[in-house]
Length: 265
Image (cartoon, rainbow, N blue to C red; front, side):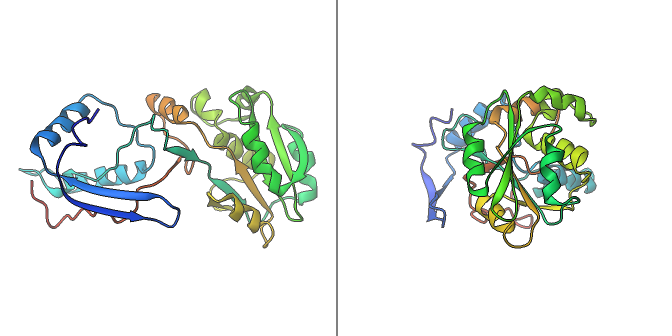
């Protein structure tokens, strides 16, 4: 798809390398034939919103609030970045949870978790590598980094057991996501923690480990969902749980701005 893009003339080119070593290139294509070809190629395609469905829903509500118009207006459109699900350069990263104050003493955590998981003690610094090594669709693994340097490694050997413990509505595939098991089983059923106010997010595992050395009671580490998880759940008409999909690398914010004041249909 989009075979004509490489040969299309670009009106301008912006190139920048960010601090994480990612090289961003922006080219503006005005060639009418190329633009028409892209429109045609996309006409019968499905688009999965992997990141930003709240922004999309807000844009729809904002436009609806303006009422009917006789012609196109800027609010009829919104910017988006499209990428291929099969692009080998795009990966999903996990989003870990840091809990500032646990409802139970950390010394009791091991016994509580053993009611549902196989639990091993392990140095905090080894948790993530062990989780990555054992990442498997036939089991679920989590790491719990704790103050003092020794954490807990959790294994759920029979993930479908979680279906008996999760009361929320939704498909089995949605319930079997790592993030759902973390929130519904570990946080909700085992620890009695509900809502989104008792923890903070981080995508940096080092930040999660540092947090338990600077006052936080625990950091819960996860493996990411797969691209196919996201695709299948969306095809079923459901949305992924909050902060469960983080695609990397991201397009640099601010490369393009959409002005509602300078709209030309």
